[in-house]
Length: 316
Length: 299
Image (cartoon, each protein chain N blue to C red):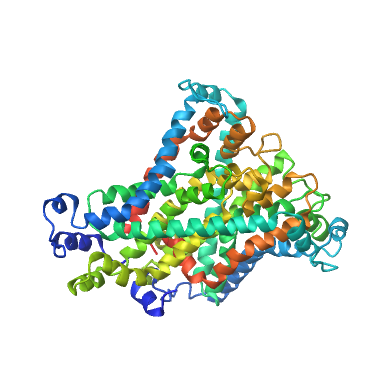
């Protein structure tokens, strides 16, 4: 984004002709068109996010069944959840799912960006192919993997048992507690790594070539160039992408819901699925929202830090 | 779509593609390694789609007997026939089109003018609104779906497609706005100023100069809004109770709640759900790749 912030500021103060008087001095030269144009977003933000969010916080402090008026109970929902073993397990699973997924996405995304940066033909073709999981509907991908992982007729078992003969017999990838979490993580990684890759690629392209040349002149090896030129050059993008993906992964509902619904025996139960089940299975809305909001301080902190980095990335 | 001139002038996402000249030594091994990695990643990425397509043309007998795993034999269309005639797939398709198109138009219109104001116009509260929009973009749907459902219900729009049309902007508007803010910021301000010196109003300059230049960005943003709406699952699952009013993702997922899965027609439905998104993506890949990176990072 080419225009430096400093220049925008001078343009603002010099202003184009400013015929209007006092109000414009207080509210800014473009306040009429500005407020007109911003009002629809303001309505959307208030009605669809800010108000529901506040209402959610309130509901989490109530005892509320579907179809009944809420009764204020203070922090009771939160306190009860704290002692609930199933909920604790969901918190643990959510962290496992999130950090497992984000870690693999980071590594695969870096690999993708590096190979796309190297001297290859048809770069945009390869980029396009590798981005497909990110564009395809998540539900479709989850259903595809549900079928691929199928214990008796699934193609993964067929490949491992009949074609490559790695396993003596098929595995119930999603129906056994030992493999279910790894399986849902792998689907999340499959879907999400292209976003890491394309973001790293954009970051790497923005690193000035002279830096690599200077490093090469100084006798740096390829690994040293990667460690001391590439990685520092994409530091900000990495922070942004990791934080974004952490939020998205932590709140991913579709993949887990379709593949396992949190099973078997709660071994893949993550917080968004538990929220849904508590609200629409058990019909306890107050408690459900308390599940969703339990880690709000962490989420809020992540959002604030991330928003700061994203704005900083834009300003330069 | 904007003409080439517009793309040129915006200069957006046109990061330098100069050859980096690194790894000149041992380049051949490196290139071979790159192709090996690309092929492996490509296979992993494409296989599920290949498998979905192959399955959609297989018969029940073939699937059960595990013969000719990787090619349909015989090649059958009955899954598609069954899907289109015996299930409510076509209604779901229509519902998805209605919801995605309407909510995309809404979000793109709101987001475009809003992004222009936040990127260019000088007024009190601009910085605050820009931050609020960005933060809104980052608030996950999983904490909003219950209160939104309550709101939609109070408006009498539960179990209605319009409830979805009105809720999808909760994630599409902030996204479109954030994406287009970057786009508008990249258009040289001098162009507007020149137009205004020639007597155009601010609005006139926006409509006649800036909007046409921003067309590729608006297109990318609209496409993203469309795919997000097309792919949305949670709100649709919660807000819609009538089986006929389901959108495609929820409809497809509802096939697996029965005892017998019918993988053939489920995969046929998956193919037909994926096709519009992938077709749009192949056709407009350049814009979408730029939009994708602009969503989070500086291009």
